[in-house]
Image (cartoon, rainbow, N blue to C red; front, side, top):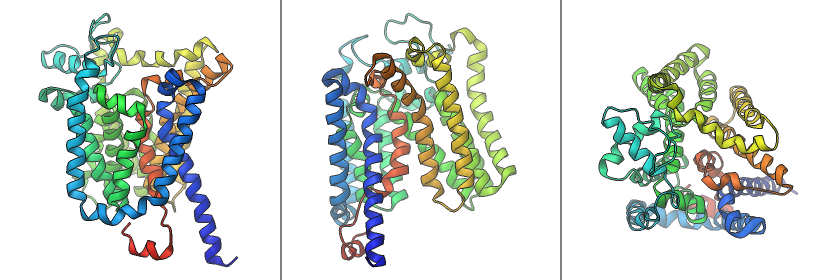
Length: 407
């Protein structure tokens, strides 16, 4: 076997491995949904189907490169318009089921923004007839303000998906790949579809956290002005202060800046980011510590405590450990693609508590159990996964075509 054939063989193995990881990461957030209606055999069939779709697109996606690049602006506008129309048309049907029968994430955010505009704490007392306890931090409420002002908080999903499309195109320099990375997960993920139609914030939250981190990493890794770097840290502080688990990604950001700019700059960047998050969170917490409902979010992991007392605390500890390990790994990998490694690390840290909850529930029932994933928490890591593993999705079918097709 000559060297070129050997290299091609290694590339093929790498492609298959990357496709497998990408398929599992795209499919995992929907496992709870699928189990509810089709059982564990249905989950197996669903994940296999996702794998087939990912592999088929991996092989044949490059043929889309030329036409999509030529008409990208028109296609992008059509996609955004279709997403907007889909939300406008389908959201009332889902929302009309009423409290307890439809998702209440959109109502919770709308209530929070309205209360804050009226000078009240956004963390309303328990027993609200329209929505359960608010689990998001103030950063998520702040991000929702413009869209609540427009009439529906669910508009933020359309807006951030549009931003994601252009961010993916810029990152991978491929219009076709960006389009597939945006549309395929939406098309094959029941969790993403339901979250989008219901107007929940997990899609928007996952995207703006991922893009804020990437913007901050880019600002500190390039010859950006100091003003741009500090602005990136402030925006990142707001984004991380959106859900408690996202705060655990701060060590990965500090490690990446340390690698690029040295320890002193990393500590300054981490300090500005941390102070911004604290300035958002602490006033609401200090106003009413008992009523600060995001602290009760860890109760969602309490399913594990029924199997092993204190298991939820163990999973939180493991997630902290995962964040520290990932930060150390990023700092040491100085010769690699820093953005790809960073996004992979963020995806795995965000995924850790979900894997722990599924493992504990499966142990308790003596079989695989994905019930924890019914609330679509996995959508928080998917966008990191797209940036981390999406770049290797397309496989050029021949060296000649590889030279002809834009990448």
